[in-house]
Amino acid sequence: MSNKTILLGAVLAGIVLATAGQAHAQKRTNDLEKDVAVRHRRLLVAHRFEVTPLFESSIDADYEHTVGGGLKLEYHLSDMFSIGVVGVASTSINTSLTNKIVATLPTMDTGMNDKTPDQTQFMDHLNSIPFHGAAYASLTPWYGKLAAFSSAFVAFDFYFQAGISFAQLDSSCPSNVCTDTNPGGTVNGGPPFLNPKYDPPLNSGTKPGLYLGGGIHVFLNDFLALDLTVRDYAFSDNPSGADYNADLYVGNNKNLGDDNRFLHHLFFGAGLSVMLPATVKRTP
Image 1: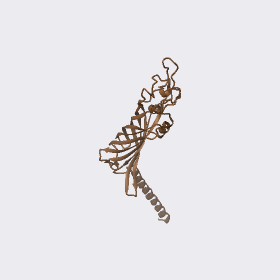
Image 2: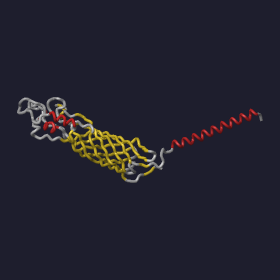
Image 3: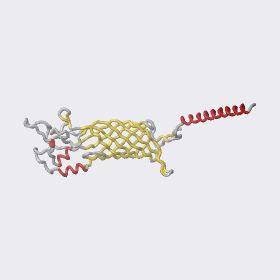
Image 4: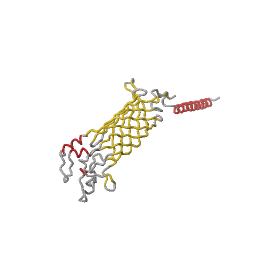
Protein backbone atom coordinates (compact mmCIF):
# COMPACT_ATOMS: atom_id res chain seq x y z
CA MET A 1 0.00 0.00 0.00
CA SER A 2 1.45 3.33 -1.05
CA ASN A 3 1.96 6.34 1.16
CA LYS A 4 -0.65 8.28 -0.84
CA THR A 5 -3.25 5.60 -0.16
CA ILE A 6 -2.47 5.64 3.57
CA LEU A 7 -2.65 9.46 3.68
CA LEU A 8 -5.96 9.50 1.80
CA GLY A 9 -7.44 6.92 4.16
CA ALA A 10 -6.35 8.93 7.20
CA VAL A 11 -7.93 12.11 5.79
CA LEU A 12 -11.23 10.33 5.08
CA ALA A 13 -11.27 8.81 8.57
CA GLY A 14 -10.66 12.22 10.09
CA ILE A 15 -13.54 13.74 8.11
CA VAL A 16 -15.91 10.96 9.17
CA LEU A 17 -14.97 11.34 12.86
CA ALA A 18 -15.29 15.13 12.71
CA THR A 19 -18.72 14.91 11.06
CA ALA A 20 -19.92 12.39 13.63
CA GLY A 21 -18.65 14.53 16.49
CA GLN A 22 -20.31 17.64 15.06
CA ALA A 23 -23.61 15.79 14.63
CA HIS A 24 -23.40 14.51 18.20
CA ALA A 25 -22.67 18.01 19.51
CA GLN A 26 -25.56 19.40 17.45
CA LYS A 27 -27.86 16.77 18.90
CA ARG A 28 -26.87 17.73 22.43
CA THR A 29 -27.44 21.44 21.67
CA ASN A 30 -30.92 20.75 20.35
CA ASP A 31 -31.82 18.77 23.46
CA LEU A 32 -30.66 21.67 25.63
CA GLU A 33 -32.67 24.21 23.66
CA LYS A 34 -35.84 22.20 24.26
CA ASP A 35 -35.21 21.96 27.99
CA VAL A 36 -36.82 24.34 30.53
CA ALA A 37 -34.85 27.50 31.35
CA VAL A 38 -35.07 26.98 35.12
CA ARG A 39 -35.73 23.72 36.92
CA HIS A 40 -37.68 23.64 40.20
CA ARG A 41 -38.78 27.26 39.71
CA ARG A 42 -41.22 28.59 42.30
CA LEU A 43 -44.64 29.44 40.86
CA LEU A 44 -45.15 32.54 42.98
CA VAL A 45 -48.49 33.60 41.47
CA ALA A 46 -49.80 30.82 39.22
CA HIS A 47 -53.20 29.46 40.36
CA ARG A 48 -53.12 31.60 43.50
CA PHE A 49 -55.60 34.11 44.88
CA GLU A 50 -54.14 37.54 45.70
CA VAL A 51 -55.62 39.74 48.45
CA THR A 52 -54.09 43.22 48.70
CA PRO A 53 -55.02 45.90 51.27
CA LEU A 54 -53.77 49.12 49.70
CA PHE A 55 -53.29 52.86 49.99
CA GLU A 56 -53.88 55.08 46.97
CA SER A 57 -53.36 58.77 46.18
CA SER A 58 -54.04 60.89 43.11
CA ILE A 59 -50.94 62.30 41.41
CA ASP A 60 -52.37 64.73 38.83
CA ALA A 61 -55.44 66.31 40.45
CA ASP A 62 -56.15 69.95 39.62
CA TYR A 63 -58.37 71.00 42.53
CA GLU A 64 -58.89 68.12 44.98
CA HIS A 65 -56.34 65.43 45.87
CA THR A 66 -58.01 62.06 46.39
CA VAL A 67 -56.43 59.95 49.16
CA GLY A 68 -57.82 56.70 50.50
CA GLY A 69 -57.59 53.01 51.19
CA GLY A 70 -59.11 49.94 49.64
CA LEU A 71 -58.72 46.36 48.54
CA LYS A 72 -57.54 44.52 45.44
CA LEU A 73 -58.71 40.96 44.74
CA GLU A 74 -57.06 39.04 41.92
CA TYR A 75 -56.92 35.45 40.71
CA HIS A 76 -53.86 34.36 38.71
CA LEU A 77 -54.87 31.89 36.00
CA SER A 78 -51.18 31.32 35.24
CA ASP A 79 -47.82 33.02 35.66
CA MET A 80 -48.81 35.50 32.93
CA PHE A 81 -52.59 35.98 33.01
CA SER A 82 -54.96 37.04 35.79
CA ILE A 83 -58.28 38.79 36.42
CA GLY A 84 -59.17 41.09 39.27
CA VAL A 85 -61.08 43.97 40.82
CA VAL A 86 -59.99 46.95 42.90
CA GLY A 87 -62.05 49.35 45.00
CA VAL A 88 -60.96 52.42 46.98
CA ALA A 89 -62.85 54.64 49.46
CA SER A 90 -61.32 58.12 49.64
CA THR A 91 -61.35 61.57 51.13
CA SER A 92 -60.35 64.85 49.47
CA ILE A 93 -57.61 67.38 50.24
CA ASN A 94 -57.26 70.79 48.58
CA THR A 95 -54.42 71.10 46.09
CA SER A 96 -52.03 74.03 46.19
CA LEU A 97 -53.79 75.42 43.09
CA THR A 98 -57.12 75.48 44.93
CA ASN A 99 -55.59 77.30 47.90
CA LYS A 100 -54.03 79.89 45.59
CA ILE A 101 -57.34 80.47 43.76
CA VAL A 102 -59.35 80.79 46.97
CA ALA A 103 -56.91 83.39 48.28
CA THR A 104 -57.69 85.65 45.28
CA LEU A 105 -61.51 85.41 45.52
CA PRO A 106 -63.84 87.70 47.46
CA THR A 107 -65.12 86.44 50.77
CA MET A 108 -68.73 87.42 49.97
CA ASP A 109 -70.96 87.32 46.90
CA THR A 110 -70.44 90.38 44.70
CA GLY A 111 -73.85 90.19 43.00
CA MET A 112 -75.46 89.03 39.76
CA ASN A 113 -73.55 91.46 37.54
CA ASP A 114 -70.19 90.01 38.57
CA LYS A 115 -69.42 86.49 37.34
CA THR A 116 -66.52 86.00 39.75
CA PRO A 117 -67.53 83.46 42.43
CA ASP A 118 -66.81 84.10 46.05
CA GLN A 119 -64.76 81.60 48.07
CA THR A 120 -67.78 79.57 49.18
CA GLN A 121 -69.26 79.41 45.67
CA PHE A 122 -65.97 78.23 44.21
CA MET A 123 -65.40 75.53 46.83
CA ASP A 124 -68.99 74.24 46.69
CA HIS A 125 -68.74 73.67 42.93
CA LEU A 126 -65.66 71.42 43.20
CA ASN A 127 -66.34 67.69 43.20
CA SER A 128 -64.69 64.84 45.07
CA ILE A 129 -64.32 61.10 44.41
CA PRO A 130 -65.46 59.31 47.58
CA PHE A 131 -65.32 55.88 45.90
CA HIS A 132 -63.74 54.49 42.72
CA GLY A 133 -62.47 51.21 41.34
CA ALA A 134 -62.06 48.93 38.35
CA ALA A 135 -62.46 45.42 36.98
CA TYR A 136 -59.61 44.29 34.76
CA ALA A 137 -57.51 41.62 33.09
CA SER A 138 -53.79 41.55 33.80
CA LEU A 139 -50.71 40.44 31.84
CA THR A 140 -47.38 39.68 33.57
CA PRO A 141 -44.78 39.33 30.79
CA TRP A 142 -41.60 39.76 32.87
CA TYR A 143 -40.48 38.17 36.09
CA GLY A 144 -37.10 37.42 37.58
CA LYS A 145 -34.79 37.76 40.55
CA LEU A 146 -32.64 40.59 41.90
CA ALA A 147 -29.38 39.88 43.71
CA ALA A 148 -27.55 42.13 46.16
CA PHE A 149 -23.91 41.37 46.98
CA SER A 150 -24.42 37.82 45.66
CA SER A 151 -26.13 36.87 48.90
CA ALA A 152 -29.58 38.53 49.11
CA PHE A 153 -32.08 37.54 46.40
CA VAL A 154 -35.51 39.08 45.81
CA ALA A 155 -38.05 37.82 43.27
CA PHE A 156 -40.12 40.35 41.31
CA ASP A 157 -42.52 40.64 38.38
CA PHE A 158 -43.91 43.46 36.20
CA TYR A 159 -47.57 43.54 35.17
CA PHE A 160 -49.95 45.55 32.99
CA GLN A 161 -53.72 45.85 33.45
CA ALA A 162 -56.66 46.98 31.30
CA GLY A 163 -60.39 47.01 31.92
CA ILE A 164 -63.34 49.19 32.91
CA SER A 165 -63.46 51.75 35.71
CA PHE A 166 -66.20 53.28 37.79
CA ALA A 167 -66.25 56.33 40.05
CA GLN A 168 -68.76 57.84 42.44
CA LEU A 169 -68.45 61.64 42.21
CA ASP A 170 -69.92 64.07 44.70
CA SER A 171 -70.35 67.83 44.99
CA SER A 172 -72.56 69.57 47.53
CA CYS A 173 -73.76 72.98 46.43
CA PRO A 174 -76.52 74.12 48.85
CA SER A 175 -79.60 75.99 47.70
CA ASN A 176 -78.34 79.29 49.07
CA VAL A 177 -75.32 79.04 46.73
CA CYS A 178 -76.72 77.28 43.66
CA THR A 179 -79.89 79.33 43.35
CA ASP A 180 -80.40 78.94 39.58
CA THR A 181 -82.75 75.96 39.21
CA ASN A 182 -82.87 76.39 35.42
CA PRO A 183 -79.25 76.86 34.28
CA GLY A 184 -79.04 78.72 30.99
CA GLY A 185 -82.76 79.50 31.00
CA THR A 186 -84.78 82.50 32.07
CA VAL A 187 -86.25 83.62 35.38
CA ASN A 188 -90.01 84.35 35.37
CA GLY A 189 -89.98 84.84 31.58
CA GLY A 190 -87.38 87.61 31.80
CA PRO A 191 -83.94 87.84 30.21
CA PRO A 192 -81.59 84.83 30.35
CA PHE A 193 -80.07 84.25 33.78
CA LEU A 194 -76.47 83.80 32.57
CA ASN A 195 -74.22 83.76 35.58
CA PRO A 196 -72.57 80.33 36.06
CA LYS A 197 -71.57 80.96 39.66
CA TYR A 198 -75.24 80.42 40.63
CA ASP A 199 -75.65 77.26 38.51
CA PRO A 200 -75.63 73.76 40.04
CA PRO A 201 -72.25 72.13 39.24
CA LEU A 202 -73.84 69.02 37.66
CA ASN A 203 -70.64 67.03 38.29
CA SER A 204 -71.79 64.31 40.68
CA GLY A 205 -73.09 60.76 40.22
CA THR A 206 -71.71 57.42 39.05
CA LYS A 207 -69.32 57.60 36.10
CA PRO A 208 -68.24 54.50 34.09
CA GLY A 209 -65.02 54.64 32.10
CA LEU A 210 -61.82 52.91 31.07
CA TYR A 211 -58.97 51.62 33.21
CA LEU A 212 -55.24 51.13 32.59
CA GLY A 213 -52.59 50.17 35.11
CA GLY A 214 -49.05 48.97 35.48
CA GLY A 215 -46.96 47.88 38.43
CA ILE A 216 -44.51 45.57 40.13
CA HIS A 217 -44.61 42.85 42.77
CA VAL A 218 -41.53 42.62 44.99
CA PHE A 219 -41.79 39.31 46.86
CA LEU A 220 -40.77 39.39 50.50
CA ASN A 221 -41.26 35.61 50.80
CA ASP A 222 -43.32 32.87 49.15
CA PHE A 223 -46.68 34.44 50.01
CA LEU A 224 -46.09 38.16 50.76
CA ALA A 225 -45.26 40.83 48.20
CA LEU A 226 -44.96 44.60 48.11
CA ASP A 227 -47.33 45.80 45.36
CA LEU A 228 -46.62 49.17 43.69
CA THR A 229 -49.00 50.36 40.95
CA VAL A 230 -49.77 53.39 38.80
CA ARG A 231 -53.47 53.42 37.83
CA ASP A 232 -55.39 55.52 35.31
CA TYR A 233 -59.16 55.80 35.78
CA ALA A 234 -60.53 57.60 32.70
CA PHE A 235 -64.10 58.91 32.75
CA SER A 236 -66.21 61.99 31.99
CA ASP A 237 -65.84 64.71 34.61
CA ASN A 238 -65.90 68.45 35.28
CA PRO A 239 -63.76 68.74 38.44
CA SER A 240 -64.29 72.48 38.89
CA GLY A 241 -68.06 72.38 38.40
CA ALA A 242 -67.62 75.65 36.50
CA ASP A 243 -68.42 76.95 33.01
CA TYR A 244 -65.58 75.22 31.17
CA ASN A 245 -66.80 75.93 27.60
CA ALA A 246 -67.51 79.62 28.29
CA ASP A 247 -71.18 79.61 27.22
CA LEU A 248 -72.14 81.41 30.47
CA TYR A 249 -73.87 78.48 32.15
CA VAL A 250 -72.95 75.10 33.56
CA GLY A 251 -74.45 72.28 31.52
CA ASN A 252 -74.13 68.55 30.95
CA ASN A 253 -76.32 68.30 27.84
CA LYS A 254 -74.41 67.74 24.60
CA ASN A 255 -77.03 69.62 22.56
CA LEU A 256 -77.17 72.65 24.87
CA GLY A 257 -73.51 72.69 25.92
CA ASP A 258 -71.56 70.15 27.95
CA ASP A 259 -68.86 71.22 30.39
CA ASN A 260 -67.79 67.62 31.06
CA ARG A 261 -64.64 66.20 29.42
CA PHE A 262 -63.19 62.71 29.20
CA LEU A 263 -60.35 63.03 31.72
CA HIS A 264 -57.54 60.75 32.93
CA HIS A 265 -57.33 60.48 36.72
CA LEU A 266 -53.89 59.14 37.65
CA PHE A 267 -53.26 57.43 40.99
CA PHE A 268 -50.29 55.81 42.71
CA GLY A 269 -51.05 52.80 44.88
CA ALA A 270 -49.01 50.83 47.40
CA GLY A 271 -50.16 47.65 49.09
CA LEU A 272 -49.15 44.39 50.71
CA SER A 273 -50.25 41.37 48.67
CA VAL A 274 -51.04 38.09 50.38
CA MET A 275 -50.94 35.05 48.06
CA LEU A 276 -53.24 32.15 48.89
CA PRO A 277 -52.54 29.34 49.39
CA ALA A 278 -49.42 30.34 51.29
CA THR A 279 -47.29 27.47 49.94
CA VAL A 280 -45.95 27.60 46.39
CA LYS A 281 -45.72 24.89 43.75
CA ARG A 282 -42.53 24.22 41.80
CA THR A 283 -41.92 23.25 38.21
CA PRO A 284 -40.27 19.87 37.43
